[in-house]
Length: 413
Image 1 (cartoon, one colour):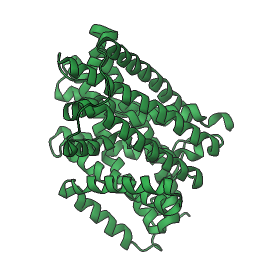
Image 2 (cartoon, rainbow, N blue to C red):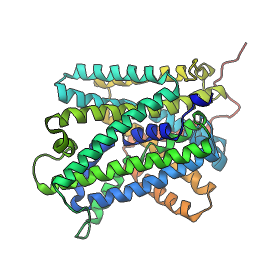
Image 3 (cartoon, one colour):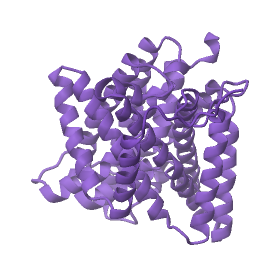
């Protein structure tokens, strides 16, 4: 029914909260420490690229709608196997990537309340269960939760940044020439601030009037993300220029909230990380269910509940994430191992998707930014660890050599 689908504001809130994620807490201090007076300019460059990145995926979602998302467009551009390769990449990434996101939130809770390592893992497990429970509800409920969280977070971060900037006014414009190597390496780091838009296509069947809703939601999401990042980046520059105290995002809301700043940033971090988890798992679980319905994965994963949530795909991802958490807690793998593994597969998926947009869209206004993004993503892949790259190569070889006549679907009696 129409009222059970998302409108532009709900989808925009879901996107904004997920794309901000933990990056808005972690990246601004890093950018300021590396670039100083050029940090705000770097954020402006990244936000422009982010707007292009988001618009590309919005165009692909409108042109090739479906719960599979971007792989539909990739199949159109490069063929069936390339589409399946992109699907496998994003599924592999999501099998490990979301756990470090929620562990970031759990760490912020641990620092606030002095929790032990076991209690921190327990907090992560509790958030995994909470997120799975929310995801089993209707997508409009999930998007409303994310919208409320995004509005609250935006108001806190924007108000705090404005207050910091007004009390310590510093021009965001650089005066001296930049350190080119430092600027380049920092821009590569800040690419992570624009990752997340590629999931928008997975929600194209969950919105009212996709041709109108998706572009409007993208504009809302990009505007919100850009305003928050630019203001927080400027506030961080104002704080650093004053040369007083440590450099962290809590400092940007201290003039507004005083002694409640650290507790507020902990709440913001938890909300942002949960929003990221909800959007990514909500989108990829729909991809898994669609592939299962087509016989590309076990058909049991295609089942949805009364709320149209792909509950079996959500639950299998929950089990995998609990296993990831157990392996981290017991020291079998490290958090950095999971992050490195997920980053490589997220990057590979984005690289294929941008390549598809480069082939599909003929406008130079689209193709030139696509080429810039391809260079950026390829460079990031080149700096990745060897083991995730070997895993990427293995998945690629298996997928591309797989006989299309074979199927994982169980025969129906």
